[in-house]
Image (cartoon, rainbow, N blue to C red; front, side, top):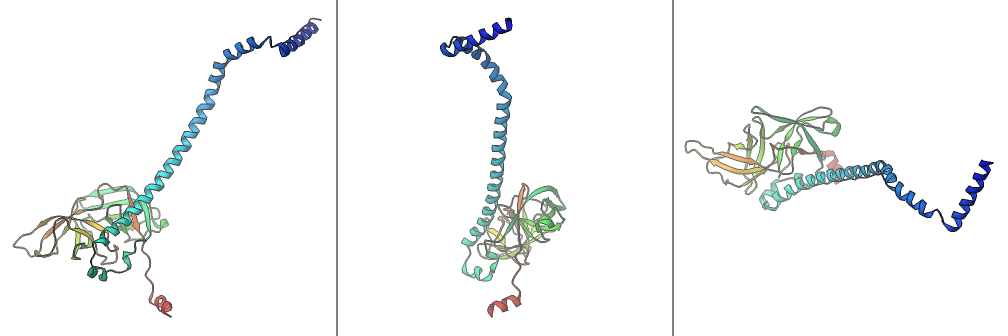
Length: 273
């Protein structure tokens, strides 16, 4: 009987509340009291959602930044060629070949290990045979020539820097085309030229670029600027010091210039036909 009475009373109360809203103040009070609890209960899900959004945005920004940084490295390397081309005269241009092609493909690699002892200036990069790296391949950074590939492993390569005491780089003075060889001195801040006579037309501040002789380095990439000229009247040759353009002591990323195979005589003859 009590259960039936309670059911009838409940139905009557619900009908009265539905029509006249008698329990609205109580409902609003309970809702206001429960609101802080609801907010606290929702905090973990809101925190997780916010964290996911921030992590996703950060990953996208990092990927975009890496892509733009790689593009900047490539564009800066190509602009080096333009700086050298602008000051070339007609006589020098006639001596150069198709290595002035600014669209040479490059491969971006990151530094893995450095070994800059006085007797061997080498670094290790994270690209090897699997990426198409070859022994003798020229290596540059965004500022100038760095060195060349000395050894290739499946997943890494060793680069011998132009500052290595055993490295020689065929160069020419960009102003007048005077050719010589820049030798590593075991220091990352200086290269030496010892084969020019005392009366050679060379000045402090002259830009020295690769000459292309020997076929290892393409023509026209900056090697450095003349920083000092030491002449001894008793010697036939001057000692010329070059300040390297490349950041030899601060290498982080490098560009490997891919060698494009030259057309064979048979292919050229077929094209002529």
